[in-house]
Image (tube, rainbow, N blue to C red; front, side):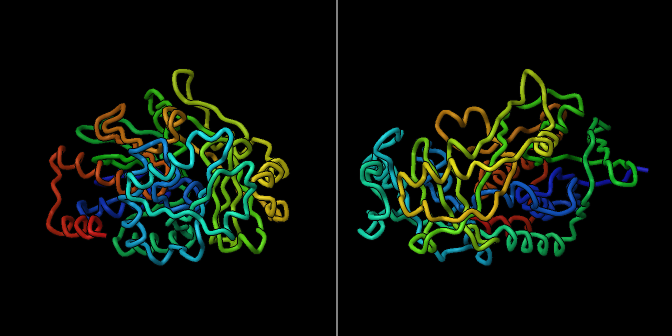
Length: 389
């Protein structure tokens, strides 16, 4: 016997949870389906924990500008998970960089991102033969564990039906809505849903192909971020050297360590979804060998920051990173939003970074208005508070 829901959210990551809470302000019943045993366990946790403020995208004016818009919204809405305890430094390489120091500064001034030349003690951390300039900027990190606790409490308060260990196996049309088949540990059941929001990140195409739709062109990477103890001079600093074959070393609040990533060595392999079909990203992740590239990373990083040769390896975080293929051109991170993809009322959403969740919600609001689901007074107040934040 099928039960009914106004909306089914596929995926229990941050985007899926935030969207579920937002939809609950409009609809009576919202169901979140997560195939794993917990919420926000994968890509929402296994990332550099950076709250972007535009500095990472000096070749993508749209992504940089949207980061500047969304940065204050995120830190105002989730202050309990924001880590401001460190100084953030961006440095520009002399060789192989796709932007010069002058271009980097001018770009940030253009989008009104605060930027200052780093003081001497910071500049002295870098090899001047390889680093043109270093800047101190305004950027934060987030604690994914605290954020998960906050979102879990918010969903409980909103009385959202969260189902763990539940895979959305397929969807098919049913009247004006969709029949959603759920696979659980004890069998299958069906949800009759008015709409489905596919927020499954690297598993988006699992549902589309299992439901007879064409896969969306996506690029996946098996990635490694190393967890390290950094030298004392870097303990309260985050450093990113860009924009080219360089690296980033950011505080990772859940572990009290730093993550070290490298453009060349963090991706261990990659594959594409598209015309050639779909390969199960999680199955590939589980079967792939995972041998750390830390020795290669740290050896190259130490050329730019000699003190990094003394950092100590404490482990690695592995995950599948999924991006739009066009993002390879300018390193931009626009959201993926496909309304009525493959079937009416099946909507696909993916974000490349945590702070552009607001862009996704804005798109969903426009979609719902167009489909005859205007916001009621309560929802308008919620939306107003979030925009004000």
